[in-house]
Image (cartoon, rainbow, N blue to C red; front, side, top):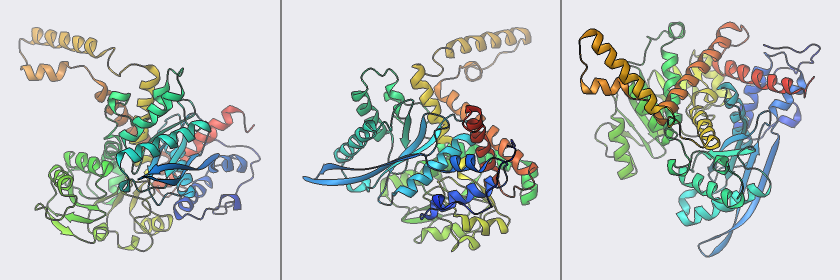
Length: 488
């Protein structure tokens, strides 16, 4: 790690009063930062700059809802400007507050750095329950929020690029893009103001499944790591691993789907209104279709329904994937967790207090800032697509396919053997956009895993994977600031 001569060091666990939060989630993020910062040899002032949230915009605006005027509260936080644009989702939830948004923005900064995505961290939130509003009302709220961001320069392809989060999706991102374009008439890169858009509106193929797919790549790399599995006294590979997933939305569903296809056995899935359990394995696709039709797991014949869903977190399994909301594993239930590995699909599902309990039990916690980074990785690809104005694969797919076909023809001629039509098609086809996006995501998750584990295995002061990820991330950000000449 880089060092700075004569740097004064901040005592471990003693953040300045400026940094103390009141939100448990923000406190956890800051506690993780302090733990990692104590391992690094950077100036205190530089660490303070990395840690603090640079800008927060709090707004209240009126929207006509059901014939009445409702004043809506909303935020946008830009945690770090060491690289631009800032990047981070927008969530719609009644629980949203400023410190939650700041915590999520900070996580985005560290997440982008750990997977080498050149963005600063940002996050937005609107304090509403989207279930209480019609599509037309949500559109009004979304467009008005976007206008507020435009007025204060908190959105733009080179400034701050939102994305979907809890309670939002491609529809809301399309509204944001359209509103921004209306104001930025001469901005040729206007579509790059937001990611997670529908493919027809400048989105990228593979974005919807990206976070769950990235989680799958992260878990697969961990269970294929012989030294790690030996340490955890587990067999290598996904085959036969029993997995419980909390949350069956976009992230949880795709994580369960890909892990199941990779050979794991999904023994439990938890939702807010109950859970479903089957020690022999759940049919993920059948369950997803059933819940989409019924709105509940109750009555599904492929498993046992459990009304108190979160109790399933404490069942026997090899890997637990909390992919719902923050603070789901806390000091009250951490002692009862029996998984050998926890892979954080959500942001902050394990509190700092709970993590200390889990680590003492020998449980590996794979941190959110790495495990669920697939979304921002593919958002980066979408942003690149929007500013390059060309679909991935468009320039070279047919050329690659032609080259592969000629190679197959040559091999057949030299060997005197012929491939079947299906074999020829499989070998000769050129990569399309989704192939390239998934390939880029896989490479990013694999290389990031090994970067984190190098810190974990070689730095004697680092005792857990989250601290290793933070050390790697903070050091990269510090190097950026030092290279800029801000801290000579």
